[in-house]
Amino acid sequence: MSLIYALRGGLLGLVLWSAPRAGMAQAAAVPAAATSAPSSPWLLKGGLRLTHLSYSRTATSWRLLMPLSLAAERRVGSRLSWYAQFDADMQLASTSLRRRRAVVGSNTTLPAVALGLGARCYYGRPAGATRQQPGVPELGKYLALEASATLSQAGTSATSTTRGAVGNHNTLLVPALYALWGVQNRLRPHLLYDLSAGLGVLAPTRTNAEYYLPRHGWDVGAQVNIRFYLTR
Image: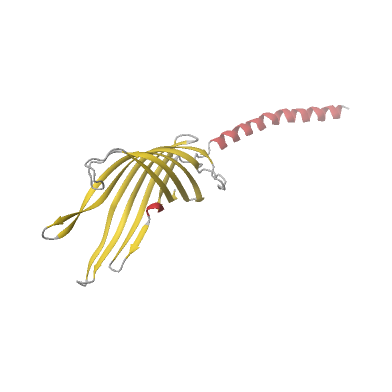
């Protein structure tokens, strides 16, 4: 009986000695998991805005419009983010004059540039969205308010007594404020799409290059955007 009491006392002492060590090991494991590297709040994007993509070709000339799109988005909460959007239409064109057997060299211009600053509020995952990846900010459906300004070139024509019709270019600056609904989701770890549509108000412009009225007032505008991005 004394041997049984001795074994029972030894087992009880072993349990009491190992319990604090197990608790310390669990307490050490929790901070190790909690101190894992957090995901970056920044989302940098570069790609194309396909709603402005166009190409045309005739017997004497060709024209290609490639709309570049760059954006930076920063998450400031579980659903809220701030972003900056830059879009530029890069136009490649060439004109061949067959009568003179000459070619007017290729021309590369930026006929339109737009800069937007806004805020997004995400509220849900899109249908068929992929599973959330570790270390990657969650995307999805959103509502956005965006202030933007578009700088574009408008062509006009004037009549000259010596040269006939002469082409001129006026620069238009159009500030605007849009309310947008959209969805942003990843197709691949570094490839995502951003679809948005909305309505807004356009501020008056100072030139009448596109309007016959001497002064153009406030206007209502609509936009639909399809963008594909490479991200990091």
